[in-house]
View (cartoon, rainbow, N blue to C red):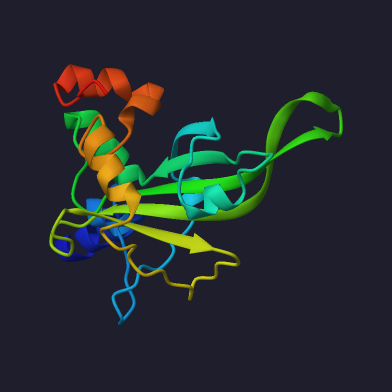
Length: 195
């Protein structure tokens, strides 16, 4: 009888228990195909938005579209990495950033003076994977039509993004100086380096 009551209570409480369990930090981490190429992060637009800029991106996709209309960039980070950063001012292993590039438009609908975001040009991903990359961080670029089966090779370590991030990143290879909601967090934890 006691076993039946306990089992019944367990079954009733199970949905609540499952909903309260948080995903481990690596659940949103990088996924690679058999060749070691990065698969596109799923639903990255549902991740934590950190900042947007106009004409700040410098990679190949940005340069190809920068002539008259510099692209917008939107920066997203995986939610578990964001929560970890709030706690200690550092990015945990398996952190992923997505830098989404969108065209810059003007004179559309009621807008006649400002600029607004248009079509997706592509996106770049910065991954912290300490066991996989000698420098802890690596960069990948997705261009054109991206499907779940699309993959990207790691950009060579000679690409300018590696040296730029290493020299100019305010916190652990990342441009926290451009993420206004995280500057004070990093300063509070003593991880922010003025750049």
